[in-house]
Length: 323
Image 1 (tube, helix red, strand yellow):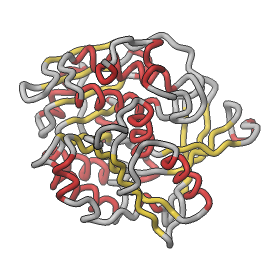
Image 2: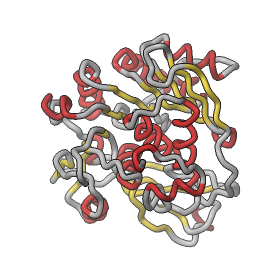
Image 3: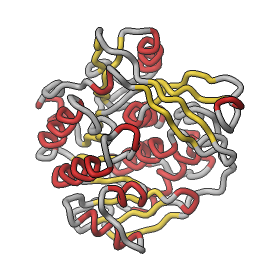
């Protein structure tokens, strides 16, 4: 790495146990451990794209924590904010796939290191050194990491771009009402939101048309709202304060997916990489993001297939941070 990181990712890192076969657990044919977590995946995807970030996350001192740490050590992600929690355990997600290979998750996170982030860990000097801070709703679902994430968003909002992936996981929250209150309460400190329409509906935003839905979210504070729409691609809305002003739909790429685990995190990583490298055309930003998401689905595991920025060239040849 020849330059200091300009992006900070704050969030969860866990171990996904990925099945060899689709279907219920009895048909899985065994499970393989894989690097996972919405924050960890986004950080690792940025690294694989050639834009290694800082990553603030918690790692346990157990065997699974060492498994995760080995992945970080093999990357160009600095270790400065990888916090070892000696009394924690590693959060685990059991991944299952239906017949269409769509992932579902069961989480085991009691005393999970990623749930115990502490306020004040990220210094003001660190925030002053980056241009973008990305956060996830996963660490906002439970204390003390909720308060730590909200405090980081608040301090970062006066210094740099702050993004949020709400990442609604019903099993992680006491109720949908709690999710709605916490996420909506954070929006005044958020510049960029990336979410599915279903997640936004849980947060209390509903509209028939993507543009109307995105504008409703933007009215709460963010200047850029990106909707991920599954098989039909993605939609981006930017206010006059956004670096990608206007509204655009990109249809994505035709692909026969093997495993969609982590595709949204890779999408988000490429979108961040695009905007932090001067992309102002929303269609170009979405094309890059959809390319990263498409690559990720070609192999099992969240970041397995995203082996480097050149992996995007199969779908999109215009990569600004390589030019």
